[in-house]
Image 1 (cartoon, rainbow, N blue to C red):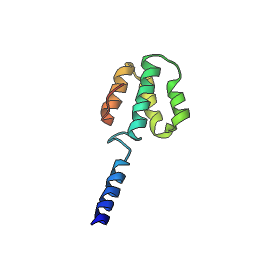
Image 2: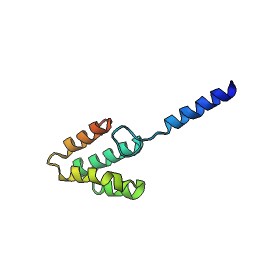
Image 3: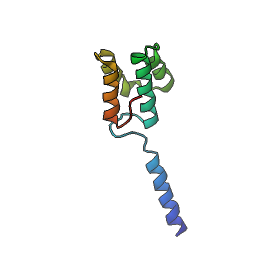
Image 4: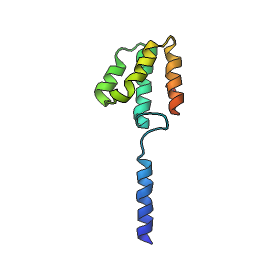
Length: 92
């Protein structure tokens, strides 16, 4: 019986390690940090925050198209909010 409990615990831990949010192409914490970087660069005007994010975190391949959408958007805050909503996350 102890083995069955251990097996369940292992399955549960594996389930907790599924990192991506439904709709987000990256793990939750990365998606949140990316959204924050987008907001800081394109809404708050703090400089090359997204570039620094890519340099430090990686994930440029799955996320660069989202940066392009924000960069090209007329209303950058709304574009970030739309991405966050699609990913099931709160906007920064």
